[in-house]
Image 1 (spheres, helix red, strand yellow):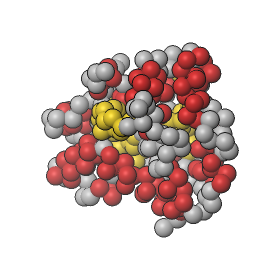
Image 2 (cartoon, rainbow, N blue to C red; image 1 turned 180 degrees about the vertical axis):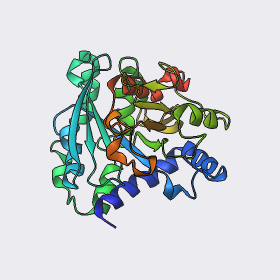
Image 3 (cartoon, rainbow, N blue to C red; image 1 turned 45 degrees about the vertical axis):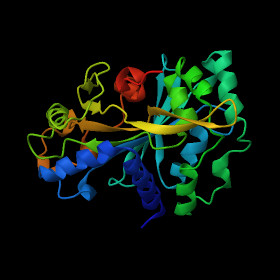
Image 4 (cartoon, rainbow, N blue to C red; image 1 turned 180 degrees about the horizontal axis):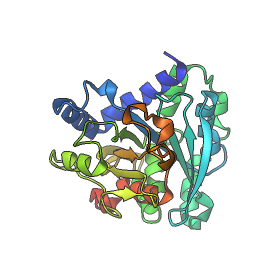
Length: 302
């Protein structure tokens, strides 16, 4: 197994443990005969969230994947959410695309910036530069360890009131934000996002309805949907040196349908591969999918 395969498997193993919807969805797909086994699911892309602060952010995390052959592609700006992002194409067609976003911390209020920096200033050098990037177990351990101390519930709530992206990252760090099931290659009757959404909702899966349950790019060739993030039991520090437990947003599952580009529509379906379909991402779609972890979707109060 190549190092990048081992790194991705480590990410997915912990992600599956943390997001029960993954097992529910995959088991339902197997039971309905849509896939022979979970190993046959096509992963369109995975995504990370980061903080735009010294030593961290996109410029740090991307080094892991650039080292293993990923290539940085288009940039995205999410003005309202104060985010930058890039997507990355993989070195092999059987690997997922990558999407890394970053909070423009300097655009938040001084109070929110102070909270964030009180944690992230504990990182005094770019941690990726300290890794042997060819050692998959070392990289895997890094992607699942805390980068700063456990936040307090008070700080988490203060950040959430201004940027739910910020509060998600301050607690979850580099936990995989989502993985994405490729829809267009599923059997007929399930190979559009609209049809697959019906399949999911019939099994009790709650979908993100921000901007509508189906998000479609202006060219009509990238169609996406996502589940609402499942909540996790999170342990926070309190003001007295103890711990308190609260339920917060964890990660979610996304679904993507990529249509054949116009110049290849004459090809028989059997000849269509990834290179013939719409690639990249769409900011208007992603903007609403970010909200899969927001309280307006999860219905978490407090």
